[in-house]
Image (tube, rainbow, N blue to C red; front, side, top):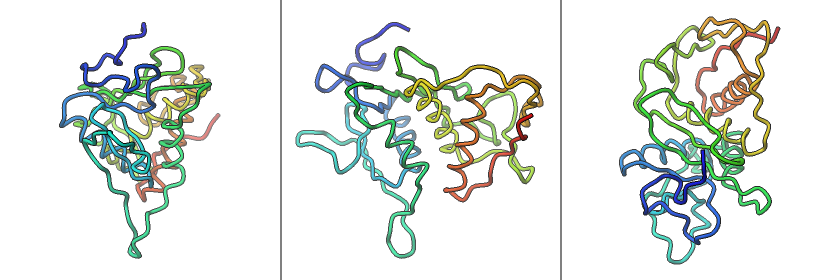
Length: 222
């Protein structure tokens, strides 16, 4: 996909300084931005804000003149301390990290289809997030099976899964090669699992564990 200034979003979602893109940008209408932002906040112990430019930033890094659209709240324990989510927080922080040698942007956009992440240009990616999917599915075709035989999880878990793919694109570790002899628990398909998808499901289970959510069932590697 060619470079498009403004990340293919409405004109108010533009690069604030006119030079380099920020790291996580949420597009769509206000309702969609709100849902996606608060789902993103659930993944991290760091308090986030969504600026009116569509850019997500840490609350303690808001600058004078920034206009805030939404402010997140972190989960607290009984003692009033932020619930520790090491893997989740590290994932979001990595994607928000400003690196002059690897300035990568991740754009979150709505979709009515399956959740997916695509590499746009360079190390940048777009996450297509369906915040309306129900019945334990993150795709229209098959349910997501958990270790106890149930299906599904809270939707922000699947946002986290897609952000793992964004992280793979950022660090150029995305590997689309097939794991031969592996049968996918969800679809029942043999020789259809890529190495990057397997890694994303492993990291998804780290996120689930920190969120006290049932783990996703995964067959052992052949």
